[in-house]
Image (cartoon, rainbow, N blue to C red; front, side, top):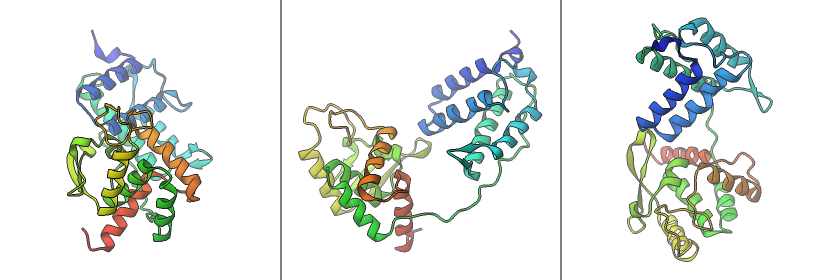
Length: 261
């Protein structure tokens, strides 16, 4: 069978299977599964029925250009979001070429737009205190907030952290980070106390999960449930811009101010 006459919808299904079999990170797969289908579904996009051999550089560049006019929740897409979309599309085009669906890599010479560097928002000392007070309603919540502030963990690293990789005495936890690389992060005494208190008094005793942080009925937390937690903390703390990555920004800022690299 001539692979070049395969409809793009089918090639994307194969591309998804390829990424899962290659053990790509969940974040990478999530980005591909979010960005690439929009290229097929939007008005300025490319129909799913289009055969791979019919795809042209002009089609792709026209779609990428349309991202500048797209809005999300009433606001134009940021330069970093557009950059992410284009990188996903280029990766898909590269895969099409390597697997002989197209004669050439259609976007080989197309560089993603530059990301405009913005001032990084961080929590003030007063806001950190307010946030910890808002989280202290539950032992788990204050342990999560304190650990993220102390260590700079990403959302996926926090929710995937395992009990067997936790050492509250030394104040360390091993996590699976970006690019599926393991790393060990440190945290302070207050965080150790919060985690210990949660493990002893609030974490369900009959929970069989290997994860450190679970729901009240023992289910594993995921990125979605962590973001829902931060929605609740946003309401209790009054910090309207609160989100998990803001804690990572705040950690990085404090680390640099303390002389870190």
